[in-house]
Image (tube, rainbow, N blue to C red; front, side, top):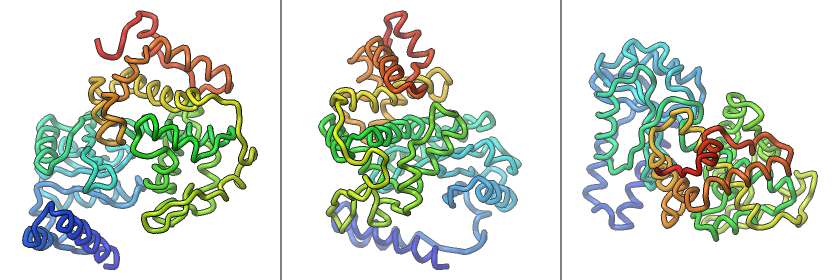
Length: 363
């Protein structure tokens, strides 16, 4: 019941903020709150047309919840999961009508981020996808539809970027410097500030899930492990890469005591710092195209702008890649691979083929 109380309090907070910002009138906020009811069992769930699960990111618990929902929900009710990376296919194993199961990944903070990633399995029906796309648009969201795959689309591209920021820190580049470089590029916040915002406990779990699935190519940087062990989970804990005091943040220089290299300046050029992170994302996006996680480059560009704040004036990650030139990116990845002796920079076949044919992502 304590968790239900927190949920209702958070909803009240969101509506109060909307009233303060004059996005809603007080009467509208009161009416919206009145539509929310809380329960500690499944009473009333049998009347629902759509049920969105948002329990803890644990596949065993989610499978149990979906099996229970399958027995209490209407046969034609849509069952959606707000997971950020767990397999929707595995989650739906205990569900009778698998064509009604779909992933519905909201991005934090939900009331401000415009993107919803709809994740379809091999069994999800076209009707379910269409219904959920229409519903998502009605609640004011931008929709991309992707196929079920570890990390889906946006997190699968974003995590290697955040992970590479960690490797740069381990190479002796100060985290404030990395953040300022990405801010100048046009990102709304640097990767370390973003990790604090997401929650380093969440980032740690997703990074290790991707590593378990994709192997050494997605090996998590050790600083993530070190910060996780310290329980410096970011903004929610008032301490991560930064110390958070209300709206103010100060660098947490204790981070450097967790590193073998300490806090030093190295001779890595600024454009190499930038490109190590950007080219990693572009390479991963190319793999997603190769594996048919999404069908169009525009899915990636819309998702990255709406879901991560990738600078809109650069028109999206793959539009930016075309501006730089696929050949130049492929050569850069090979150079980083040689310089770090790491397979995480190995250019994928899709990128190599585009480079060989002197083609771009957008034909």
